[in-house]
Image (cartoon, rainbow, N blue to C red; front, side, top):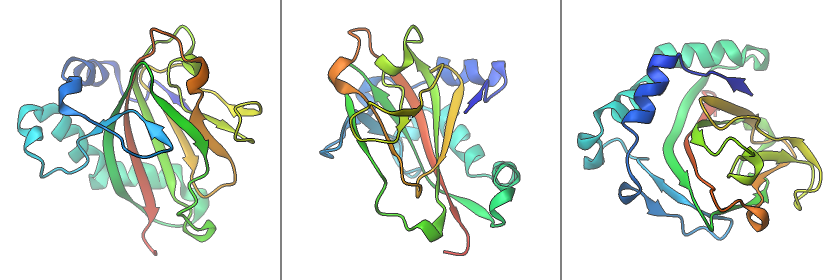
Length: 187
């Protein structure tokens, strides 16, 4: 978990130019109910949000890839950005605790949840994705301490659950994230 992920000026630009909910779609996955968008850079929506497009270009850049590879050097593999997208959580949103079963242990895929903004009075009750050793939110491994300019990084091939508890979400729930994955280049 990294706090103050981007320097203050860049972070304020992201906040200022964040797209409104009308540019997102509701997820239809049974494990999650929240709004997602901006996964495909060829989407014409990016023409209205140049700063978001520039941020995506940066996350997909060789410069950022080099930084991520430095962070993950203990894996002794080279990684590349595989996917990226935005999400928004509001009232009645949920992310059921689950393990990303599509991945194999061999692939060592890393998920990055860049928390842009959220209700910081209690992150776990505002859609702060946490890591758990069970699928009932009873055995937390890690819960984010802030939903502002912070990033949660985890190996999605590890045997733990992630999600946020939809049964007790606060009425002032909101959360904005940029989610991206890095895969090893030797897949």
